[in-house]
Length: 169
Image (cartoon, rainbow, N blue to C red; front, side, top):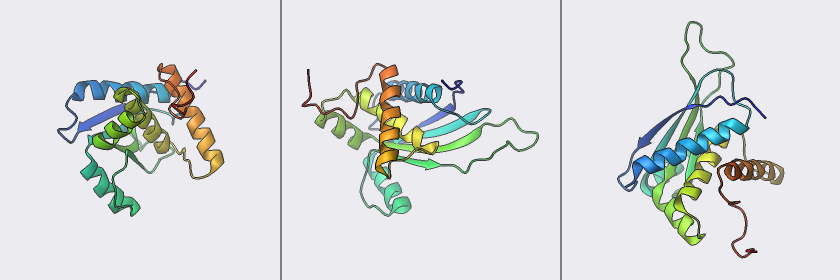
């Protein structure tokens, strides 16, 4: 298993709909730390910025950056990676930005019968993996990324987010 190099997580609460911001921040930090503990991380200190926002803001980002004029649950914006830090600096390497939309996250959690915190954890892990180059554009990529997400979330005690709710034992 990779050596854990936990990234510094800067979390911005950018919309008042995140009523329990402290709990949401704790959930996101825990999810990012769990993911970092299970994957290959860049050498040295790293940093990630997470914006907890609303559907309107995510819709604007999605439209402006992806050409999709609709809200979505999570967006990731990987930073350009440097192989080595700038000489004479010990600043963390920026991995990128993640934006999570409250209303879409809440709606999905409710429609799938999942605790909100579990779904938020999944979206934070999913967004973080995108920052590190994981993707789901092909079936093989999707299988690998979803398997890793399952493993990370299981470590947090969160059930498989891809399991069908109809397959209850």
